[in-house]
Length: 127
Image (cartoon, rainbow, N blue to C red; front, side, top):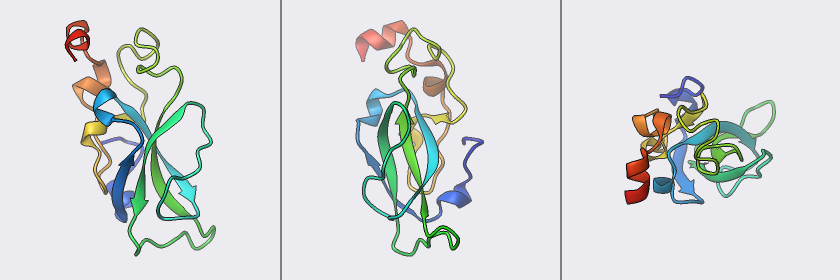
């Protein structure tokens, strides 16, 4: 599990929506964003691109102070491995990164050999 999110933070997740095929990505970054709605594509304010997000169940309550819902967003930055395979994250991954194949509603996701080290040169040519 990522050390940055807890399963209790994700209790009201209902669905994971992918905007890109997660099987093509070694890792995705995940973060909690505050949004006014439980469902639909949230606004995105970071560099890079959003590759997925979660939707919440109808029973998910908004924060009483802000009136906003906390939802997970999955994203990649311009210097991540998918865009720069020989760059900074040729091996290793950012702290908030997890293997997208391990993400499910209500589950944080895990770091795997693939997310931490990437595909070997042989796997890249076969994949």
